[in-house]
Image (cartoon, rainbow, N blue to C red):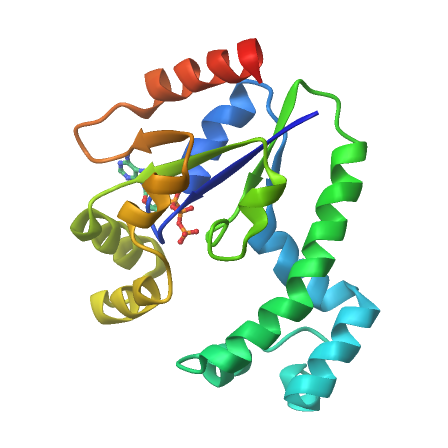
Length: 195
Ligand code: ATP
């Protein structure tokens, strides 16, 4: 089965693009939300997180305290790296198991840090969604009722479009004046034809 990774900076429109792929019948594995789920359900992962960050990383109802965790790893690349080292193998395992249950010519793995994490090496093809920074900030501020400063801070933890484009097999432009559906249909055709 062909594995296609989709990435893009915060607010670039990864999820929006994936919605279109789903309509075309392509199964999508949302790595970021699966990672969050696993932190609440995977006992081995929970133990490792508690060993590293202490019991306060879980709330009374046993769900991960994402705000607390974000506060610890924010601006601490070493701890962020350790967090990723714990979470990524669990996500990889979940993805491998999920792939075995899918019946489609290809599947999509959607992740914000596909390249940064090295996960792209497991993919046969990669796609990056590119949108101007200003547009992304506006969209995320509206979507999350966040502030421009916070969004820009999060962008600083991710690669630039330039770096992502260098490694991607396909690029989807998602600025206001660009139509994503024809771009997606074209890529879908190419992947189905050549893998
Ligand atoms: P994140 O990295 O934060 O998960 P994302 O890359 O998955 O973000 P989306 O959630 O798909 O991005 O898009 C960000 C916001 O912009 C959403 O509210 C979405 O509805 C909106 N959006 C996406 N594409 C467009 C577009 N072409 N025109 C207008 N709004 C858009």
